[in-house]
Length: 144
Image (cartoon, rainbow, N blue to C red; front, side, top):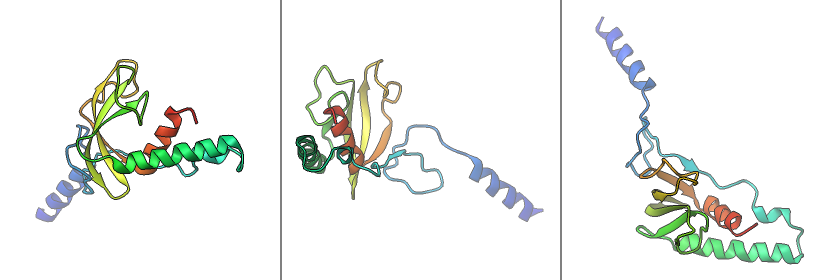
């Protein structure tokens, strides 16, 4: 009887999920709910023919994006939508701050989002972004 109760309790616990915004930085446990945005498998610059001016411009922008992302540290504010890589100005649809850093990824917390932003209703939520995902975001916001 006791073994059955322990088994049922264990099974019930494994079915529970926590949908609240997580404050657990990089949790890897049973109830980990911090979404991760992975880097794309193919760079945006791959669509341009090598040797062309568009490819060179994209490679330059990618280099600048990598520098920008690698220099971010805890407490830095970023524009998550509508100008990633630029100082968050009035045109920024969603602002975030770097809550934590880890090898090849940053934990961003959405601080403010306008109603037209895809980040609206996600304020105070945290998301892990791989560096490559943020570089891709930079390239997308700069027209590549």
